[in-house]
Amino acid sequence: MPKITFIGAGSTVFARNLMGDILSFPELSESTLVLYDINAERLKTSEIVAHKLAESLGAKPRIIATTDRVQALEGADYAINMIQVAGYKPGTVLDFEIPKKYGLRQTIADTLGIGGIMRGLRTIPVLLEMSHEMERLCPDVLHLNYVNPMAMNTWALLKATRTKTVGLCHSVQGTAEQLAQDIEVPIEEINYLCAGINHMAFYLRFERNGEDLYPKIRAFLESGKTAYRGHGGGVQLADKVRYEMFRRLGYFVTESSEHFSEYTPYFIKRDRPDLIERFGIPLDEYIRRCEEQIAGWEHLREELEQNTHPLPVHRSHEYGSLIIHSQETGTPRVVYGNVLNHGLIENLPEGCCVEVPCLVDKNGIQPTRIGSLPPQLAALMQTNINVQSLVVEAVLTGKREHVYHAAMLDPHTAAELDLDQIWSLVDELLAAHGDWIPEPLRSKPVMRS
Image (cartoon, rainbow, N blue to C red):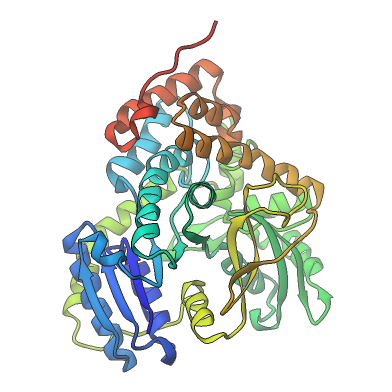
């Protein structure tokens, strides 16, 4: 039975979903689950949850909880990564509050934009360190990376280490399910082909039994029903941004409207509050979600730890357990993974990180060649790839000037700030991050006149 290590297992809700998915497969029910986290208190909760899940499913895994990373990784067959470097405080708060002083507002700030850039700068070095440990402690491990900024992290890991890594997200299958609800077609009857970059992949085909379903999606757009989409906690978020981009581009994007509004220069403008209102853009949305989660954590912990009833298990739509099951049993499946672009998408840069369908079986992760994307989609993706590539370059070379370059080329940042403001913002953010940023990037470059 495989040894499956959860890195950042104190992310209890996410770990719970993945553990439940894994243990629900009879072939994986006696796996060794190693839960690793630097937060012993949260780790304890996840360990209790693991035992309760096993009890609910009648599974008999070996469960180990440890704050020792070497012990967690040694001999692992699979490593599932879900860390958040610098946490909500100081990390996320800095990413929102300092840009706000410059009039630069964000929604999620974990994938692109100035917030995504900073998250990448503090996260990539930690992931590289872990990956180099995997090279030594578990050289054959498959590293399943769920950590954002997905494209930047996965690109750096695959470029700079020998560890087999695939980046996993739920935006492709999650958005497909949302679209199925919008057009009232059962998701089980839909097949689709999707490709691009993480959070900016597009459905090239969306069909039922050979019938193109895009006309139904257009009809839904014209019906005016795109105003609201439910979110956890009873909050209603507008989904107008994605439908507006569908109207303009002809293809539907995978990531949510609140995310997508900050990947482009069109929607969040400090001198256009009417756009914020018209498209229902929830500024500071990730801050709200984090504070809601923190406020509910104690209640959640008590519920998980003290509830004597079996924990209900509902299979999630995450790919992690499917990949492990397919590699262990040979059952072929198609998942969407983030991998390097070696001839997969012809009109995106060679070697960048792309999200494409991948066949998984005992041969591992096998990406599908797509060919060329519609040119307008590739051009829009390129604006995001520019930023991703410069952040990766900054970390791998230690050249701080590339952090400024990444911010200069970020679509949303460049639409709001001039060059002096961008330079000043980067300086202030790097200074505020302190030791969370590696030493070479903390030294200011000499400006050439």
